[in-house]
Amino acid sequence: MEAINIHEAKTRLSQLVARAAEGEGFIIAKAGKPMARVTAIDSPTSGQQKRLGFLAGQFKIPNDFDRMGQEEIAEMFGG
Image 1 (cartoon, rainbow, N blue to C red):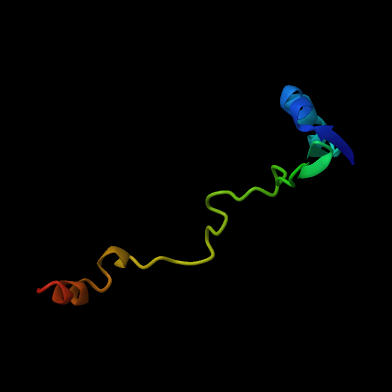
Image 2 (image 1 turned 135 degrees about the horizontal axis):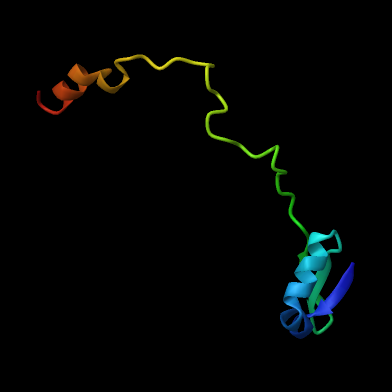
């Protein structure tokens, strides 16, 4: 993994990040001492992303869902 001086990293950050995204990570160093390692993160592909409705048809919500327990709740707040 290539070590890049912090000043050079600030100057060429967008180029270095693009390289890291392609799998070429790098180390940011200050006065020759490694400070940080930059690597690409794994992001989900479009087929792996969660979507709304992925559980459709797998359970049923009762028709009185919005009124369930309303008597008990009313009693807790003084009726």
